[in-house]
Image (cartoon, rainbow, N blue to C red; front, side, top):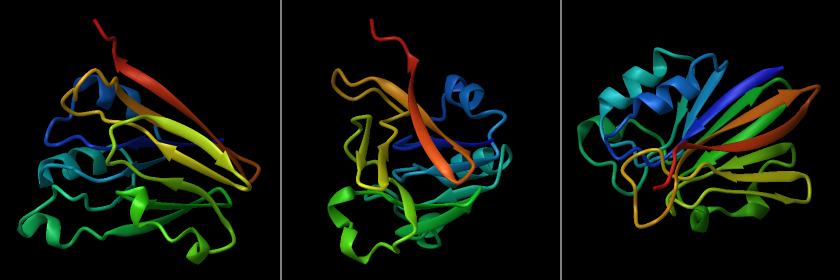
Length: 155
């Protein structure tokens, strides 16, 4: 079984709880609004990293970060972008099984036909009363399932 750690909307804050959760992942995906290049370096030290640029990612370091990216792992194609409103679902390759996105800071998993849509929520600074979360995608025998985890209890 492969484990893909999924994080988004760090906004320059990579919490120790997020690093602990992501440790042991076979791959990592960051859904944008990274904050700075140091976040990318620290994540890439854990596992191979697929990353997309968010609307708040600006400057020279962010120019090389793509708006969308594809990860193929364990027979599953994962497509990542920051804002789900920018997705043309009809243009997705037919073999896409997981779409990862961020932007809203609202964690969500939703199965739409053969495609699992996953927003891991925000692992960075808490926004309003939303939880601080990350997610994992477990891939086995060409199938994917996702789980969202609250990193910091609300209180």
